[in-house]
Image 1 (cartoon, rainbow, N blue to C red):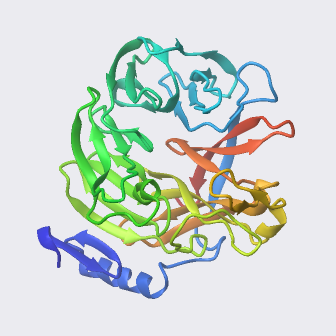
Image 2 (cartoon, rainbow, N blue to C red):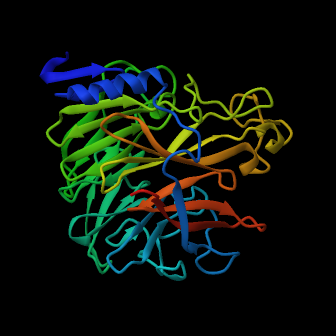
Length: 377
């Protein structure tokens, strides 16, 4: 028993775990997380609702978007913060047709240097996170500029907080650093609370070790580690952790360091998106090694830094496959799963809408908009 009434059983911790649930947890732990073969039990369905991007022209995507949000009119707001040539945020119709861009380049009101994240929050307000300026801009539901405030940290990822502010996954590049992995920041740029405390210095890649996906709820947030060993935690807004479990999946074998794939070493798995559905289940999007990953690697090249060798992915879907998994947040057990061998990267966009990122033959990026559902809902 932990302080505050927390108990850990079979890798899952809850406050006041009922005996029947505890039995299920123990059974799941003995069965490696209640793993199931794909196709067993409920199935995950995908339905296309449009696509963002094209083969060149206005509104085409030269790089993969870092963030897509839906505004109150059903339009898609897209951030593509390419380091080489950052684009202003774009507005696309519900089906994905390009409409226009927002703002101008610069540091003044309504101006942006490199918008990396876009969030729709309480009252249909839109928040822009300008990564280069480390600044939060507030826009009205009609996308008119309202105000800007400085952010207290550089953001690894962001998500909407119930109070209209943001949850920010706060990376650290200092190996001696400890403290919260996620900050709750108000719309005024004030740190309200911290979650996911790290009580030990990181081992090697500090930013990656602290990276969390954030799945907000009305009274808190679920945090999911993106790399190494996927750990899931639930935190209340007042800073209490009242649930934690590890994700056990053969599609995500634990590892110690992030290194590129070679003919002898498969690519490391990672999680790319997470959300809680209306039934309280956790959905996760991820990336795992293709069974024949060697076939998608090009000839060895000298890396820019360190002088080591790297093997570029000539055909990304031959190296990594995307996957979707759904879990019961009470027991941590697997409910449904689906592997997509025609996709290498999935991103969560809004509600049950995800994006499948792909490249055209001419090298432009397209994001297929897909609604996900599960049989037996």
